Length: 218
Image (cartoon, rainbow, N blue to C red; front, side):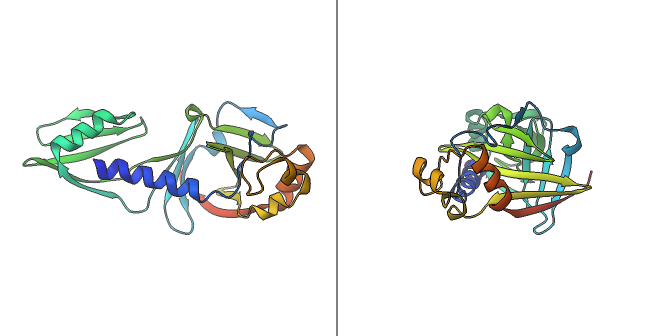
């Protein structure tokens, strides 16, 4: 199980390191804050490029990698790790298997063989959650998913057009901090930015690039 939890940590580190821009406060600062993800967006989506998938629910979004995670470890080490990991617990114990619940999102089964557990499981990675302090804002016909990080929030601009979900992000810090008034009052590296309403409108028009596209499947 150490390999399993280690893989989750690596995924989170990779996501954080890839973020070039963050904001001190959730953006757009002047826009309406929502308490749940709109029902229209709920469902399962497949990435059009790499076939990974995401599931959007009322209060969170989870991502599943294309390939499952292979477990082959001693029973005792896995049971200890489950006890120590918040949100992961055993919901069923059979004579030759256990069923593990991941954060109330999905259940996966591992089989006993001698003194070890084996299986192929699809681990959900939480990429947005109100419970973790993430914030959702609405502006015009787009939704802005603010994900909490050390320097404030990093941002995703999301729009659903029929059954295609488009996710945009700010790829280059230079595109944002080139606004002189922002660069004077914020980190010149693009972290903890503090744009006013006019400045964010410029960012919204010019600095977002499509990073991923998903097809809604159900």
